[in-house]
Length: 326
Ligand code: AVJ
Image (tube, rainbow, N blue to C red):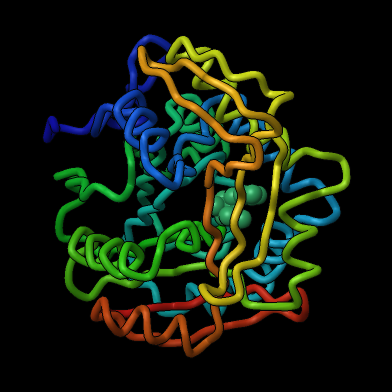
């Protein structure tokens, strides 16, 4: 990784933001499709089409997390930012279009720099341009990359108070051991005395959960299958999207929603120079979305050396925002 990070002011159409890591997409696809239980990482959902499809999911009536979290953040923003010191740096993990960020920025004039980290170069580029337009005095320093990898914060921001922001229940995509490791990485990256604001979706009745991941208009199904389209396009894949069904299931034992793509038939698929056989009914596991209770979340953060300073939970369908300190 290069250590000098480009400031947003210099970010124009022909200069790419900092890239932290190559995707490893081909290697991950080959490994994932070769495993006994076929699996792909949900981080690969978010190419330009996938990011658009996720935005469309957020507009479906069934997918409550985004609108619930947004309303909660708007309501609690003054309390949430009350203790943030002057000249603070906001670091966001998986920033996408940086929409929720604005709720914090609007409430906290003391945040004067923003470091959005995202895997989608396009999303980051657009978000940075819009933020520069709407918050002219905010220093925006975008970093393209997988936020699970520790990134050095820009040297120009060293010594300033840091606030991490990880909304959207993205933490739910990680198994508990992975989430614990991720929280430790974030804690190390943000430094001592940092705060960390995390949005997390709560356990609730399975019908509400399943509907949220299997909307009637089929947007989530499209989002799930877009992973196959992306393999076709980028890795010379031969997936027939009509030969797979989208499936969303509540896994009670692990307190998580799971998405799968179920092969309708016995079939052979080529991708990344390899050949993969699917049996009829065989499942390709594409995502876990863990759901939490206040105590399961507290146990997770405690294991990472973080304590919950405060938390807020919306009315049903319950979504929570946690303010953590180290
Ligand atoms: C963006 C990871 C929080 O798990 O709810 C939406 C992604 N998957 N519908 C989630 C998603 C299916 C979403 N996160």
